[in-house]
Length: 286
Image: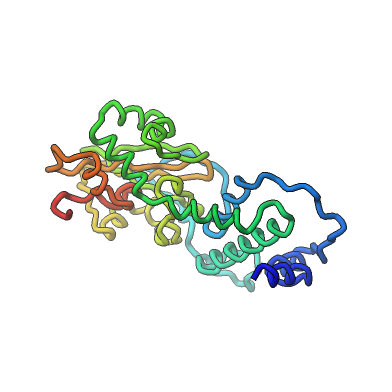
């Protein structure tokens, strides 16, 4: 397999060769190969994420609140009298397919340039796949049993996560708490920014154009579709993630959990409750 892969690059074929021709790169000049190899761990993680994330957007740290004011629809369609071009916005499926293809091309070119090896990218993907919502659940469970830890988490989420052995990653992480009067929910209106280092990969609906557009306009209606009804007396706050800012919702602790161990409490914390579209599980479900 490795020999065939090398042969395809030598012949200028494969995804990498296609993109070089598409963007005017021409044939690969082997006479200008660099002799040195870079330390590639960080590069490998970026390339591993490219198959799912694809693009970053400018940081914007505002919050949307359910106070009756309007928000623009970031994802609705407009009729166009002229034919579509390659640069115009396409339906979600085609956008995701394009960036997946771009990610594969980037990976092949970086391997060919010896920036990192195929084994390094395999390990980076394995490390990414090892991150699950259970890591975030550990953080929430500790906050439920330790008020001082919860205060530190709400003040500095990165430092608090480190206390329980959870790496929050390079982006700014903000923890927001659901209370008797406030319910928080998270979205990325421009793409799919998500606290992947503590929750793993985002669900497909989180990346969908419909969720990204509707949750800021009609959060109560969208939450109800997830089976979560928020009383009218409670405020709903919608937090918009950015390329350098992520949010972790600390769901309200379910009733009837007094005396439960921290490990047992962590089992009640589901992924969707840390996004804010659901509540934590009740003990009766376990």
